[in-house]
Image 1 (cartoon, rainbow, N blue to C red):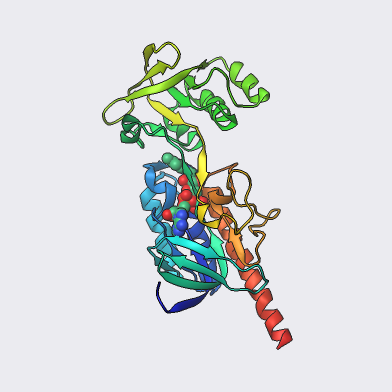
Image 2 (cartoon, rainbow, N blue to C red; image 1 turned 90 degrees about the vertical axis):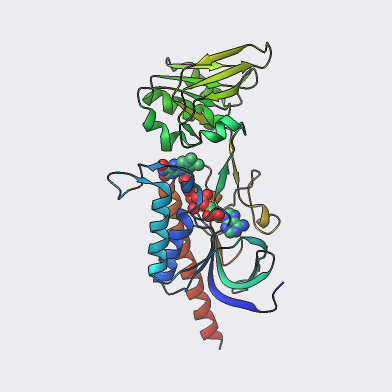
Length: 322
Ligand SMILES: Cc1cc2nc3c(=O)[nH]c(=O)nc-3n(C[C@H](O)[C@H](O)[C@H](O)COP(=O)(O)OP(=O)(O)OC[C@H]3O[C@@H](n4cnc5c(N)ncnc54)[C@H](O)[C@@H]3O)c2cc1C
């Protein structure tokens, strides 16, 4: 552990669209933000080729380029972007308290305000053929990538509400959707199951799993296996959507900050305030509903504004009591 402790005004943890947008606003408000990027500089969008739905890019843009541009914009106003992983936190419970953060198990930072933008990680099946074709037809986001498979045949894996909702979303765009459900029932609510079962171009296959995703550069088909009979079947598809859940990146905050039972950070009303004064959360780490770059960016802006107001109130209180 290093001996020197750096004291700063505003720390941003995570470098996805939420973190960079928070950085742009915080830097322009002269909060002199320091950002730690984590293991995935640029966040989830660096794992996708085309982003077609972020406002301001009429021709679309590839994810990694968009994230480099966001970084450049944040740095233009003075954000200091550092490569590093926050490994431990010791948040204050007091208004005006100092939040202690450890980076890479060695560096100590003390911050008056902290913006958590550590995102969430989409779960995948883990098959080599699936991993090979991520970005080549395998996606974990139907709302993001479904449009690229307009009028084509696709498949989706999952059995919960999100999977059911994404399956019906895809059915509106695609010619046909095959939904693979591992068990002999769906976990989705009765209402969602009703929607699925009443969508004519959507077929549900129960007790069915992915055996292999077929194709070298892009998805050309899917071999499925019935986990009861062992029977294998090949279906022709061009897109495979994995909808088996996300894991919010909040392990280091456990026991420190209020979370829901799935580990998402709870924020207060329409704000980005957490239960701790001076700690704010933005992006997918506090949003299991929308999970889009533009909504992450929107809450990143809100977090910086909330942090700025919090710091201004503290400074005023200090002046009054001085
Ligand atoms: C395949 C795919 C395609 C997508 N396509 C689109 C699309 O076309 N349009 C769209 O709007 N959305 C798309 N999305 C969703 C979008 O990427 C997310 O909604 C968005 O990136 C969330 O932003 P975020 O800033 O909250 O977090 P993330 O992008 O998840 O970034 C989290 C950041 O936190 C960092 N981090 C995590 N833990 C730590 C730590 N301990 N210390 C420091 N840093 C840490 C990570 O390194 C990362 O930089 C897609 C998602 C996927 C998976």
